[in-house]
Length: 116
Length: 113
Image (cartoon, rainbow over all chains, first blue to last red):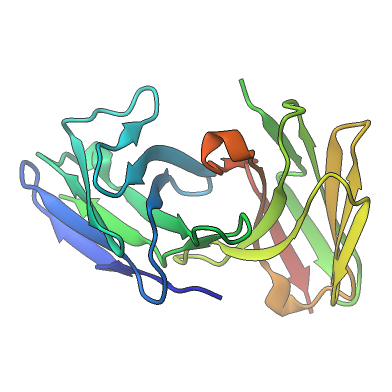
């Protein structure tokens, strides 16, 4: 299947700083990518839909100014957590779908963010 | 409002047994129902998926049963192995939503040796 790579896999940052997470589709071009947040022992919560060349669509309750999403190319979407706080500590996961293919979504390996 | 309800929350099965996880959905517009397997610290991986025009799909030890009238679908893992121990999520999506996935809350499966 298609490969989605996420980087970094783990990151620790200080409160008040910003951290960027990258999501790359390695062997296909993804016009749409999705960003999820997952708390321990819970399900995946969709944060936003990232569209190449246009603004991301955020789910209700997700702060646009806090979670900046950029999808500047067909193979790269980034999520920047700005002014991070301990409550932003979570597991962030991206996914992408092969355009024109079936509806299978391929997920990255996730990024464990810890804000201290 | 939770659109996909999953049960049980956790499940313990002996090696060689059958694991059964159930999901129910509310939106009749959903047209694709995947199951994902997630190991700790990893992203979900697609296990098997079904469309509503099919009542059953089997891939190896994994089978999805789909009941359109009841708006329910289930995952059966035959001959469960300790390596199957993971969290399983059912999901649903529809074309009109850009294939945005709606996940169930997950089932933690433990297969004892």
